[in-house]
Length: 177
Length: 462
Image (cartoon, rainbow over all chains, first blue to last red; front, side):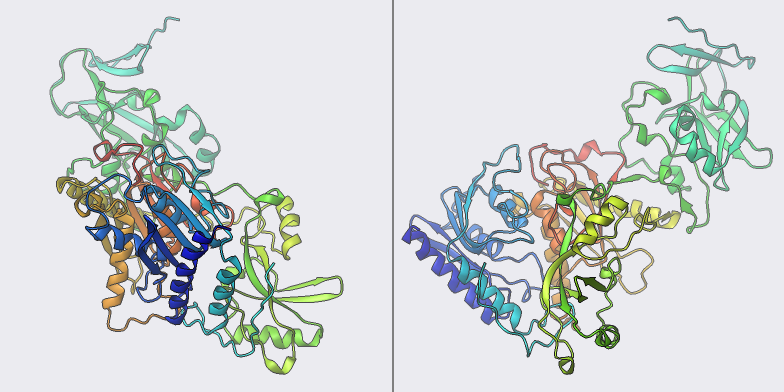
């Protein structure tokens, strides 16, 4: 596995850890352009009380509102930008990334419930779109770490679950299939 | 083939036949305004008979909805008047004599075709001469009933009802319910969700556990289609809950840890489906389950129409501000005493230079901000599923991103006006609520008429 990709994925993982510390579903991402991180973000769905505030959309807002990063209005502002994200982008984010012309996506683990880069729906390439180019999405970068941090989140008290439940007796599973 | 129209004895009117428009009624001479030109007796068809026969054949285009809800077939010329958005004949239903009186609305020239308006607007707003918000039919004269391109838009007949609870027959609704996915009849199409279950080796613990489930609030209606207990190969397993985390079981029973397995997400509607679903977990059989499609009362339909008017107004406002004419509206829920929350938004991608500032995302953000500003707001207990139980009205079928945002927010149902067949995520390019694997479903209603003044380029994401 290319060490450059692992390097950027480590940065994304640091954002996921920040999310975990803040009581958010631990997903983090970095957007890289010209060998530099231009934006990094993490999930804020609980803080903003908005289930759509995923890490990717947070970072995209940052990029588009920064005049040095997006100096002019172009159709595909992310055409020279690569995304590194700890979990496969969901269907919503996968569509958002395609609408912005993202160059390529690397992710950690797949997302069986909402994955938009193949797990549930291939919004990145399989699903036809009349204008937006398809993009490549590759998983498996620090996959185990991405899964473990999600498990760690679900094993601590999740006060945002519809019915709060005590988890004192829960054991962290460490084997990954 | 040449066709000769029958004679009609009313000296003012002639029935005439034309190749492209079918039969119609024409003035045989000059007729003055406010002249009664026809009194048609009616025959009544009961709803069951109507559903069995009437609604499927040519008769369907010639019926009137009577004041008491019965379906009436007009005899005489009554069934032959065609529809026009600029009708020259008005009519009144007369319950005293069970007939319909047709009267000229203006002076009529000889040979002019006589047309009535099948007024959906009158039906919903019996008072007032509002300009129809929905596109008029192409103005190619008075279209024949059988030649109106879209069979779905010519059903609405006048209905004078003062009872908002009266149920509106599906045919008379201004929208179509997007048919849910066909019943899962093969292994690959079974929709499942992950549920927590636990093995219970001691049968005597089952009663205790069932009682405990109830007291713990885990008798979740979302699991109502599943049996609680599975007995398989001498192992008894109890269904606990869905959700990301398992419930904490009573310690004194010394049970093993709960584990997650996929269980069917809906009851079985057919026997084939039952056996497939029960292989995952014992599932209830509910053939032709009623209540899947809720009934629509006059009041509720009026509520939906008003909401769609708000959407149209907002979309036009958006357009006047230089944005795309795309809007979204979350009204206060119909009939709900408490849930008065509402919000309206439109597309702002142009003014913000942000290609993702779509009406739906703007709406969700707005609703989130409403909540954040609320003094009693709490960030707990799933309250960030902002659209739980809510209906969202849209000018356009939402794009894949927005459709998924609605799904993430747990919207109950959406209505949209203009479909986006190439980019939409609710029936166009894909239909997210029925995609295998997603963990929430919402209902989709499509307005029967599109609004061309809100048309946008078909390759755009709404």
